[in-house]
Length: 238
Image (cartoon, rainbow, N blue to C red; front, side):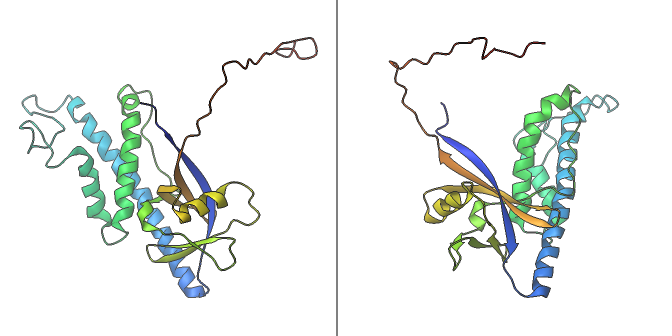
């Protein structure tokens, strides 16, 4: 069945909404630390998922070892003590619990496993190299973590994310960002799991919105015609 909704992503500049210089410095440092951990976690995750896929292809392991990537509690031949998806969540939790919010590494796990699964056949065929994440990786989070509020001047929006105060900086932007944010605040548009990106020292919200597709009724009696002529050729001549 065709989906009746579409996903829109908008890049919205953010400022830390704090006048205290020292606090603002601490907030920025916290964000840089989380980004660094996401960078490390993303590469850990892809490496472990790939290794799990390749275990059965390692020809120098003794033949009497039964290898099956399944939960041993559900399959006697399984070699995992949890589900495949939960293996890397537990890995990230073991490394980063207490260093960054669990909501971040949970969303990182879900997002990157989805990407890995979409590309895994290309890895098996040797058509694509394993992804390697860079230090500018976005910081993912759940939509439930933020609640938009309008500012006093009515030009921008404020929200707290993991106890860090932010406000948007729309400036002279003439796109649909303000309309989308306004609809989200009013509850007529759904904000989905999104991410923060640090780019050249600036902060951006990569906001993901879910909205209904517009349906257009076509009039079958209306016919569109096109013709080509010397004045409007179909392609440039050599």
